[in-house]
Amino acid sequence: MKKEQGKAGSKEGMQKRIAEIITRIETYSRSPWFDRLVVAGIILLGFFWFSVTYQQYQQFAFRTGDTPVAEQAIWNTVHGRIFYQSFLQTDTNLREHLNFIQLLYVPFYAIIPHTLTLFFIIQLSFVAGLIYLFWFVKRKINSIAAVIAVGLFAFNPLTASQAVGDMHVVSVAGPMFLMLLIAYHEKQYRRFLFWTVAMVFVSEFVAPTVALVGVLALIERRNWKWILPPLAGGVGLYMAAKYYITIGFGSNENIVSKFTPTALTSIYKMDKRLELVRMVLAPLLWIPLWLSKYSILLIPSLLIALVIIIPGRIAGGSHVFILIVPILVMIFVDLLEKFKNHRKWIYGIAIVGILLSIYPWSKWMAIDGSDFTSEMNRAVAMVKDGGSLTASTQFGPKVNRREEFFLPMNDKMTDYVVLKTSKIVKDANELQSQELKYDQKLEASGLYRIVFREGRVVVYVKKAKIAELLQIPEDQLANLSDKELTERWKNLK
Image 1 (cartoon, rainbow, N blue to C red):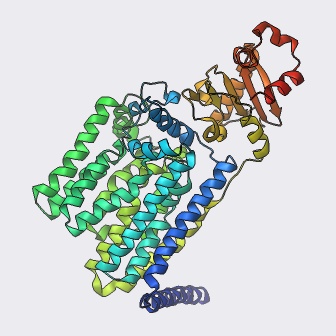
Image 2 (image 1 turned 90 degrees about the horizontal axis):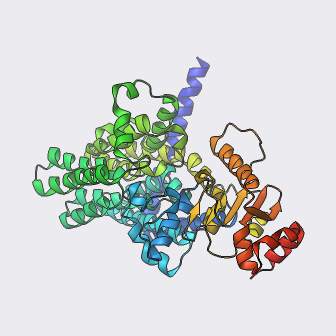
Image 3 (image 1 turned 90 degrees about the vertical axis):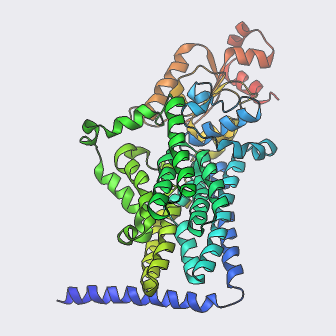
């Protein structure tokens, strides 16, 4: 009995606190400086995101190869090799994903060729989207709803993963799809058409969701000018992907194979898949979602989570779920318009959802820097020219700006090899095992000399490259001791 009374008291206390938050927002929203304060807060959030990525870059905190290999394709494009990504060992990275959105980054990267330039563009798109969202919801409903909508978008863990996580050029799809949905909601046809075309240039993973906008228009508006562009764009993008993509997870064969009866009955780690769905839908507490017309647009992303994506790739592949965030926000707006007499309840649900999201969101802001930052900086200084190079993923953003860049899994005998080796000799992690085998292969090849080794950080350079830059015959390298070679190499300009 006491336990039940305690639960009831706790529930009442939560409701009271939410009511107090809503009342305060209502009071503050009447102030003339309120709007400027919200916009300033959004801009400050953008600066905060950039400061996090700056620290990640400085401390070698990017743990997957996504950032360096994606950047290298843009670097090569700036230098005339259109979308060439040597890691994939194909003529263009469009063979893996139809990421035409890469073109957006090229002019900015040509001016400042740096990893942080790419993050800046992504973060700027989120900041601009949040400011536009605030003004749209304020005009459509009121300031309270506008602030909560901004909170739903800004503090979703998926937003955090794309703003400061490993860089994906398709991260801008979140703000772009928000613009498309707002234009659709407001019946602004020209803007709707523009953003529909823009979305087709993002990547093949948006195709089903864009096509479903056409299905939504068929159900709701029954007007071909709203139905045809997204439907044709989504189907056309899918067909182009089916024809052109030949490798990787994005290939048509790999996706379609996940929907065979055998594959569907053998889905593994369903608990982790359901946890992902629970986490990404938490900001609206799951239940009210299905009362909105926009809920139909969630289906492709949920199918990817439940059926297609490998659970271990959820963090690194979270960009494929970024469309969920603008859909949730538009569901929130739609519910407020549909249930005007229950707005305070909807506000309360959204605020609780935001509070639940804060913790997973904040985990993305933690900077998991390397314990060997100073050693790794010294190792990077041992790379003397733009020769072919292989590096552990953490080194990638510092050394990937060259025509030929690889990760240890490529198993290439490149001019330079920069590794942070595993401290575990036998490890169940396949990637670490690959790196260890690669390290042993380099040692046994006889083609390399070590020019740097501190702790677990080591730099190999091909003997031919050393002879070229030191301007000595290759057969004379054997006369140089390790210490002499390291000193001469270190002082080489």
